[in-house]
Amino acid sequence: MSTTADHAPTALSALIETADAVAATSSRKAKIDALAGLLRTLGPAEIEPAVGILTGELRQGSLGVGWAAVSAADAAPAEVATLTILEVDEALTRLVDASGSGSAAVRAAELDGVWRRATSAEQAFLARVILSGLRIGALAGVMVDAVAAASGVAVPTVRRAVMLSGSLGGTAVLALTSGVEAVAAVGLRVGIPVFPMLAATAPSAGAAVTTLGRASVEYKLDGARIQVHRSGGPGSPVRVFTRTLAEITTRVPELVAVVDGFPGGALILDGETLALTEDGAPRPFQETMSRFGSTSGRDEVLRPWFFDVLHADGVDLVDEPLQRRREVLRTVAGAHVVPSLETDSPAEADELGRAALAAGHEGVVVKDLASAYAAGRRGSSWLKVKPVHTVDLVVLAAEWGSGRRTGWLSNLHLGARDPAVPLGEPGAFVMVGKTFKGLTDELLRWQTARFLELETGRSGYAVQVAPELVVEIALDGVQRSRRYPGGVALRFARVKAYRADKAPADADTIGTLQAMLKG
Image 1 (cartoon, rainbow, N blue to C red):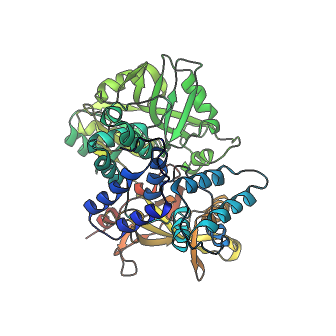
Image 2 (cartoon, rainbow, N blue to C red):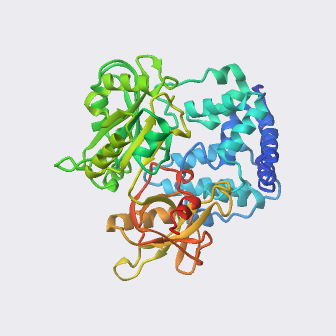
Image 3 (cartoon, rainbow, N blue to C red):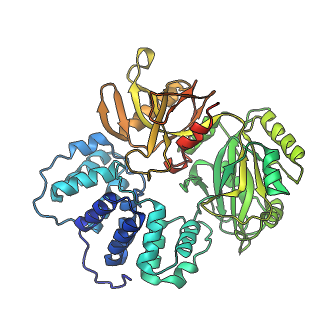
């Protein structure tokens, strides 16, 4: 374990050597061994930044630095490697903290300062890190195993701590500096978001009930996932987080007000939020998501509905059966519980599914009443039914528009995830089509600015972007195609909404699209 306070600073070059070794092998065991070897040498303060860099999840989050800014940092490389992991981490923190007037100059100065001290190899590595282009195959699952190997803490114990704390880097620090008892003691903490439980798919609500037996059949709202934490009783602080654990509390005061009024003490609630029309129908999903990205007031009022409670009045409920959690939820959230039905009848489940669609929602989720809350996992105890053809894809590039779209990046190049290729490596996303349909002027303006921030290069009339943005695509189906490497192409694809609440790892796979082929 790394426990000494006077640990000698670890050179960035050592981390790069490890990254190169991980990238050079396809063996999961070899990757784990290389990462574990590095982790054992790190000082306590170096662990979290190193884990973030190697997994492509910087602890600072999105840096807001694009291809143009990195290209402008053209200082001659240093001849001798002197940069340390902590020096790079501190520079990235200063860079992301820069705001307001003069922030661009501050960011440029920080990049220039790092570039002047970096060797040629370090400059190339840092450019990949900053542009979210680091591809070494060190995904979260591999890193969890590496942390376990380096610390001697069992993999399931590390994994559970990561899920409940929402922090791989923080868990790594705990495992490597404090050991198994400290990691095993990690539980829910009000105010610290946890990774949400996810659902698999089923062809129909009736089929899901047939599989699970007596179950909770719940409306799947066409909204955005939220997790809401209240530190105590009414009047105590309330915090709201997205599906990706980003905090949006200040942007959604109406959600805070609703949860503030709930009875009882401390709470952690899982649910959805959406805007409604005057007659109670859901507004387009994009209107909901626009609130998540805005720091100013909007006309749209968001309404919360909850389908789970993870903590109530000092008691953690994640290991309790869903039946018990639902009982607690009804006493807490009352009218703000999603419409649902407990049944063992496939016919009744299908009827509720039709009612959900008629009300303008996406479908239903069928849940095993005996299931615990598996934070961060997609299992078979929750089954979603979405009859409408929508897929979540990743934007790989965009083409400059013409006519009235001149000056805007318009035609999207869309990729599905290849589960056989680790995220971050070349080929992790397979192009399946293009579309420029469904884009409003507001979306065109937003995505043009955002794509230029994520730019990784240009070829002809297209701008390549880091594969970070998930977009929900409505389509009539798929067809066989020799044009795209996955053998399928989208039919009549149109943009439904950008999914700021989803990460690239949540995108649909090429297998999902291939399974939609008829005949």
